[in-house]
Image (cartoon, rainbow, N blue to C red; front, side):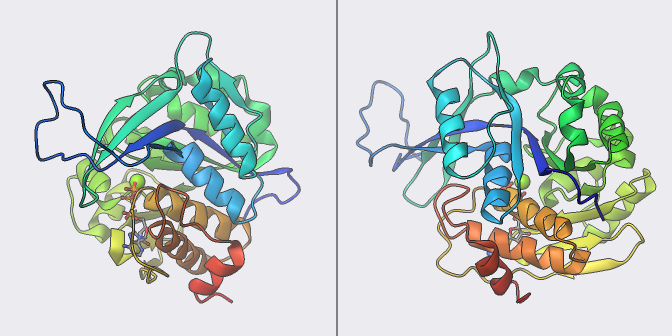
Length: 320
Ligand SMILES: Nc1ncnc2c1ncn2[C@@H]1O[C@H](COP(=O)(O)OP(=O)(O)OP(=O)(O)O)[C@@H](O)[C@H]1O
Ligand SMILES: [Mg+2]
């Protein structure tokens, strides 16, 4: 499926966040007016697709590279250190001269419900020039994954052209969405330049106005999508459609231990899917590896605490 004589398997680009986890916070009550809330030790984790999918792909044995902006602050240094500890290449994290590292305070209540206080920070500056200045990096990579559609205002209008240039370098393109998912504008122009597009169900509903997964995918196809399409369906798995029009129902894989935290399941799914395809699996097996990777993710705290090795994940998927 891809050129195999390249040194990098996947460049993971876009959202690159430090998550500060605070719990338990009684979210049903007012926390204003100078309350002091006693909490568990506050933990710091990494988030965003660059962290989540990048670390997951590294865990699955892929040569992954993180590409984004961080700030000239302690959080940027922390991201670099954490990525390196996890085997994710951090050499292409660029320090933005003015804007800070993207950070989120995640307030979690007793039941696991979450509210967020988020500073978008430097990744909001990603634009066409940032990618075109680094086009040689994509030429050295078999694939790229970018996220999240609907949250990259400075890039989305130019994204179709950027992806076209990346593909010309023999690098396959994949995109994930987040937030509300945005609309078909400018997604309609982007779809013809994507090799892989598998948003979540809620995002895809907002984009297309359809709710039935086959109808959603048909809308994407009618707009000229040429690649592997799909919809992630949470604990029900996913529906995929190959570039040649075959439907693949990917059943969910039973989580290998108690479900602790579903943060990052979608990014882990992508990591498994791309790893499977890069290893030469057909779309059905790659989908199973994706579902197994998502199922591992939900068993640990944060997006990466539950991840397992390629062997364990593939065994869980029934592939070995
Ligand atoms: N509770 C679960 N048990 C087993 N597998 C799960 C569970 N939740 C999610 N998954 C797997 O992870 C995949 C991705 O999850 P989901 O559909 O929630 O993506 P998403 O909405 O993009 O997630 P995120 O909130 O991380 O962005 C699913 O397709 C499924 O295979
Ligand atoms: Mg998602």
